[in-house]
Length: 272
Image 1 (cartoon, rainbow, N blue to C red):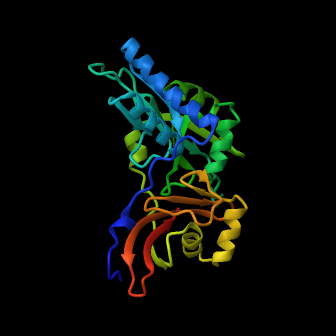
Image 2: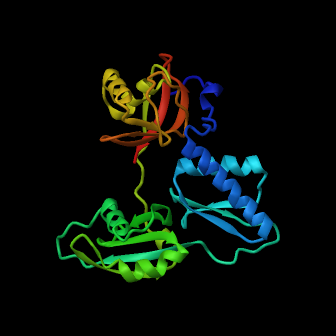
C-alpha cells in the first residue's frame, strides 16, 4: 500500500532526440512528406513505422508545424502505424491501411504457427517490412490470423501468399472491424517495490532476478528502453517505459504508485 505520493515520480519520459544519421534521415523524410502534401494539396502517407519511428515522425510534424496528421495502424491497439498527412480542406482519397484474413488448413492437433512464422512467409515474398503492420492471431480459432498492410500490397499478398511453413493458406481481404473484434490477451498487472527508479533496480524486480544479474544484461547490450539500446545501469526509468531484454522478454512499467511505509518506490508493471 502506498502511504505517500511523490508527484515527481509521475513524470513521463521526454522525447529522445535522434541518436544516429538513420534517425535524422527518418525525421527529414517525414518533413518532406509534409512539404509534398502541402505543395500538391494531396494526402500523403508513410510506410508502417515502429514505436521509435513514430516518435521521430511526431517530433518532425511539430517541428514543421503540421497539425493535420494522424497515425493509423488499422486497429485501436496497433503497435506499427502509418503516418497519414492530409492538407486542410482535403478529404482522404483512399485508406492506406487494409486488412487481410489469413486462414490456414491445420490438421487436427497441429500447433498453429507463431507470429515469426507468418512474418517469415511474408518476408519470403520480398515484401519490404515497412509495407506490413501488425499480425493478430485469433485465439478462438487455431490457424486464423489477420494481417494489416499497405493498400497497394493487398492484391499481391492475396495472390502470392499460399502457405506458412508446411501448411496451406488462403488469404482474402476482410474488414478491419472484424480483426479489431478479436479478443486480445489480458495483461496480468503486478506490483512490486524498488529502492529507486534506476534501470538495474527496476529490471531486477520485474524480471525476478538479482540486481547483479540485471546489471549484466544491461552491460552486455541486451536491454532496450522504448526500443532504444541502453547500457547505463543508473539510467532513470519512467511510467510508460517498455523494457526489452533480448532472450528474456518484454515488460511495461505502467504506473509509479508512490512510496511504501519503508520508503521504497511502488511500481506496477506487466509482461507482454
